[in-house]
Amino acid sequence: MSDNILKFPYKVKRTGKPVPLVCELAAKQFDQVLIVGTNVEDGYVQMITTMKDPAEVLWHLESAKFGIMNGLEEEENDE
Image 1 (cartoon, rainbow, N blue to C red):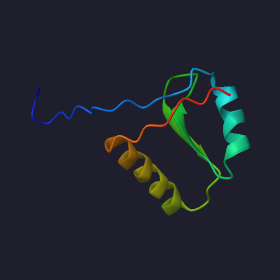
Image 2 (tube, rainbow, N blue to C red; image 1 turned 180 degrees about the vertical axis):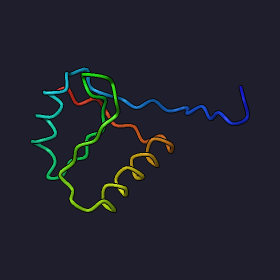
Image 3 (cartoon, helix red, strand yellow; image 1 turned 45 degrees about the vertical axis):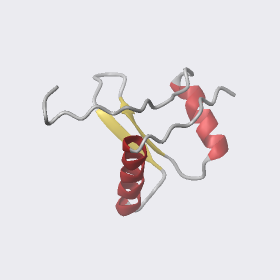
Image 4 (cartoon, one colour; image 1 turned 180 degrees about the horizontal axis):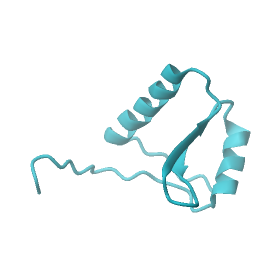
């Protein structure tokens, strides 16, 4: 392994449900959302959010990154 490649020992759990159902679950549980994904047409990474303040968006992105790097795992939500 190269010295500049980090292997994360943690796995992020996800639901096997398609995007519309995941969004429906999020609508029931969250009052603000930040969604990052790839678009259908050409696979480009895009983001959509209900947050107006770019600083708040950045804080949530960094918080998620920190959680992944520190092994934050949540159970699958298959309601």
